[in-house]
View 1 (cartoon, rainbow, N blue to C red):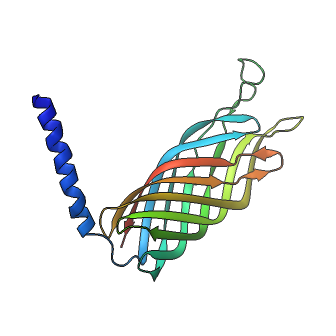
View 2 (view 1 turned 180 degrees about the vertical axis):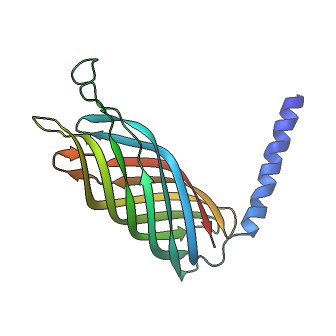
View 3 (view 1 turned 120 degrees about the vertical axis):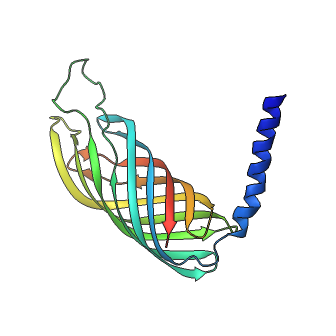
Length: 196
């Protein structure tokens, strides 16, 4: 009974906090921002099928289009982890470093759309200048180091706790293909953003 009362007290305190957050809902959504995301990067292409921890950081500026909509520019960096090679041959290693590696710089446009005073959706897309390492998917597989300019895109949703701080869930796709090496990766992440 005592544990139930303690749990009920925590739930009540949490419900009481929601109106307090709602009172500090953003009134102007333009300005500078910085953000960070961490989550699970997934690669299921060619010789790779697995996941690893990935992260991304970004920053930029948004202009207020309406009280609920802001559009802007962003730049950032990501590291999408190291994913193991599929065990297509046997238990013996095929190459000295069979893991994929993918990281790069992003530059693009983004939008933030508040559908209530605190809940929002986001969208982003742009160019992805990547560098990657991995086993090519052809008749004579080679461990290659390549770089290229491709594209990225993503969506998300979250909650504005104050005018300056929010947390959200995101899905991003990073295209990374060149010369029979496909390292295109999905990132499902939790992100935080701070607005100045």
